[in-house]
Length: 324
Ligand SMILES: [Zn+2]
Ligand SMILES: [Zn+2]
Image (cartoon, rainbow, N blue to C red; front, side, top):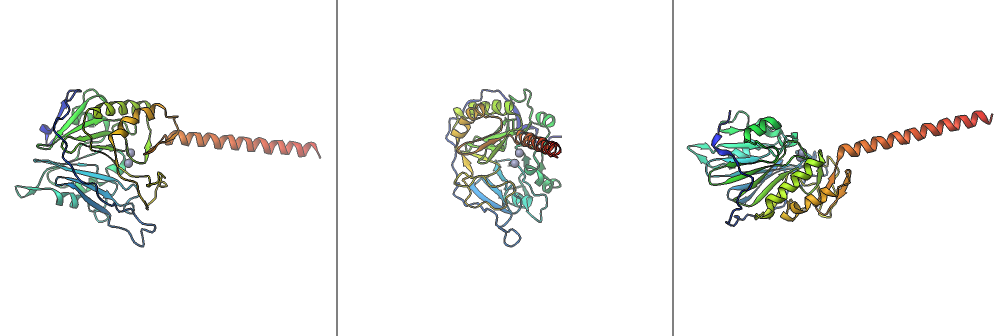
């Protein structure tokens, strides 16, 4: 049951680009970056950066969860949107809901209504949902593809677009399967920010469905081409400033690369996906990888090595028998 049926509506594919300039904000912030020994000295679990008066970026410290997700809070005149709820269920370990509710303007003595939506259903982007479950005025849309399509009114998955009206602030909702079958990208018309989750980020672009990823990248490039896009903000940072990847599971991100990517990165993505070898490709601001294929290739290699080893042992035994 939707509490805010009026805020969601399907719009035609060709949306006229906004003629007004995007409002600005600041990304002048040093993100906490975990610690070599989190048990000895961990930074605060959740960092809040005010991008402007009604836009917040929240960062889950790598010690709170190695996923170190970035979450985004957009405040309209009537309601607010939180994009992703992060990887930490326990409010005592990371007080996400309390922090977000504290940032919301008060209307009629209550925090403004809140929609907690997700870029996609991977658990690190929605474990924090439980902290919002019993709070009045908070709605959490489904993450499963069919239910999500119904919720946002997408009739031509994955080609449709939707929008969320927060009250004098409209967020475009775009469909971007490829990393996850029900991945969404959000575009804020007010700030020109594009929120790309795990679809595009300074780190590993993990391909689940290569054809879908490429088609989504082409749709996204077409969407941004004639629009002012101020920054592209993903769900994680997994690269250091020198372009090296942090190991999976790292709770320390020394010398972390900037969070923001640019419109040019969106425009370059279709070409990079078109030339992807299916396993691994390194680019200036991200790597493209297919973990399942890499695992299968590794397994095949192990089988070949074991086979060669077995053949070698049998050959050696035959030689020893023959030479006795
Ligand atoms: Zn993901
Ligand atoms: Zn993720």
